[in-house]
Length: 204
Image: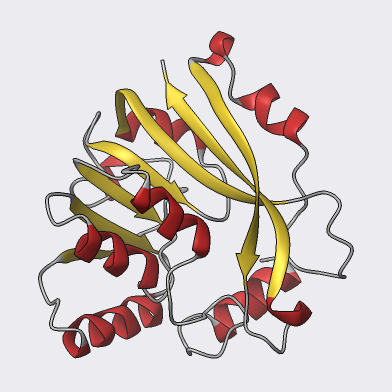
């Protein structure tokens, strides 16, 4: 039986009304784009209603962007946004679980090793799949809730030590940078932002 927060997420995700569905790319995604963080084959793992993926595809036209979410309604919303923005075909939207353990059950390019150069993942860390998808030297960007965020509920708070325990040279990864950032939210939820950290992680 799914956890209570997973049930709530499934009910509101893709409605356009969820606290994290802000109808614009996250600030840290915009900043990474300015720093040319996205190039080659880019995977937005857990894309929601598609704003980050569509922004990257427009700002980095040479990038090949695939956006994945497990909630079909999210992808329907994202397709509608792509149509409104005259961007149909600019992002490959795929309904799939990035936590799927059997690669044969995943559609391309997720069933291929080394299929992407950059992974943008804003929620959870699916380490085994990430290692399979990312080419050697590829980068994984993830925004995690800061442990000092005091508002109740929301995503799990992730200390730096937890990330470095998972992503380190002994497991085939290197944390290249840790930066304070914010996760932007609907203005009626937590005042519109939450404390977060952006991790830049490279596959060795």
